Image (cartoon, rainbow, N blue to C red; front, side):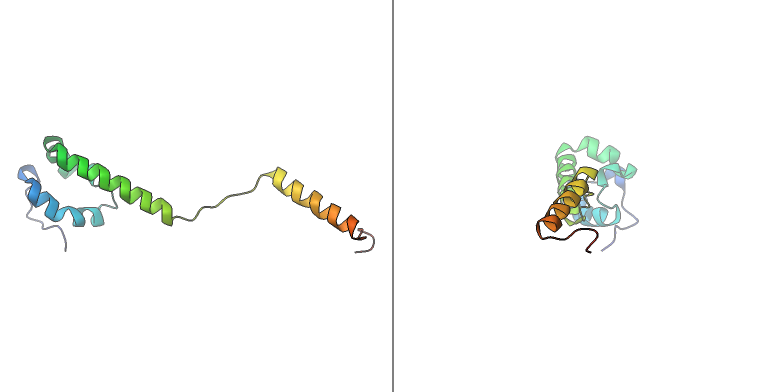
Length: 99
């Protein structure tokens, strides 16, 4: 479904809005509240504006759940690993000269 081009956004009714809302989200990358065609409508219909805010928050949370998290260890972590490996090597009788 696509948003019909003949929608009169200035005279949109809440039930019409709810009917096209899924497509507005699909086409607007989850930012329906930023669509300039809807500013007047959302200002005049607080329930619809609240619904949009809730759906945008849900969409953002879902996006964050699917986004890979990349954590770069600090320099201290690498120094600790290096120190621990050196300790293990010395404990097992391995030295740089014998490697």
